[in-house]
Length: 157
Image (cartoon, rainbow, N blue to C red; front, side, top):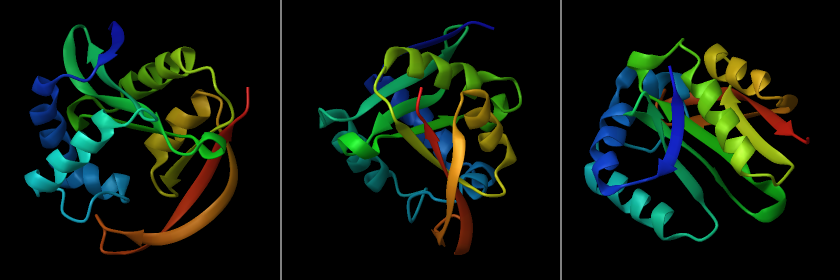
């Protein structure tokens, strides 16, 4: 399967909304928006992302089809990666390939990441891309309605 990244287009947003509204996916991600079904909040969030000159966000294509998004955001010394792949495509290496492509395109280091401690799939993606665990945190996970353990990761090279 061929993975490519491109600029986010208006037509991608309805797909992103559907991907990010999936209850099983949001529970796994844990740290999501307060209400993943709130389209107005989603639209406002993406309007801010797309207007920012400090956020790099890309659409993930698998054999030409939109399957998710990947990006880098945050203050210069604390830049963090984020990614989301439609649950229908989990377990196929797409998130790993997309994150690797982003890391090739964004040379700045260090980069940081966070993942729910029980999100084995996301932690595998980050490890395969060279991120190492640097610490732990605990915070309120909107998608779970409870405090959730989180791992902090960093990529230096």
